[in-house]
Amino acid sequence: MSSRRSRQPSGSSNISDDQIKDLVSKLQQLLPEIRHTRTDKVSSAKVLQETCNYIRSLHREVDDLSERLSELLATTDTAQAALIRNLLLQ
Image 1 (spheres, rainbow, N blue to C red):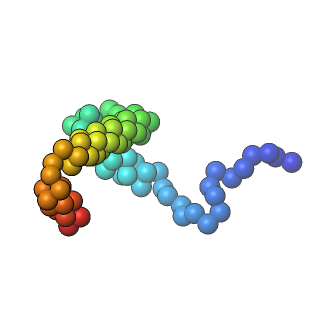
Image 2: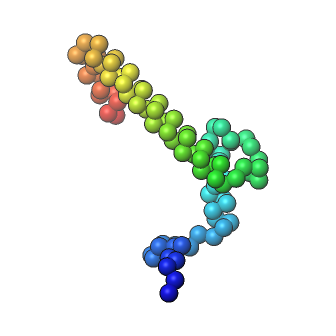
Image 3: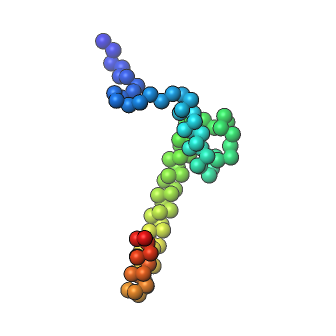
């Protein structure tokens, strides 16, 4: 009796190697660090690692901007703060 599990969960669709390569290539085009590198020169693992790093940096940037906005709203008068909040909600 084998203890190995199927690599594919039940109910999921099959994705071919060509589709995975295409998706990795598209993902690479979104990453500033490796956007202009030839696709055949960058491993899929490198693209995925850079994607994780990029997402982390975007989260940090969002957190920083949110903090700066909170500080700005705390130091402005009520009318200006209300106006900024309304603009953000649009």
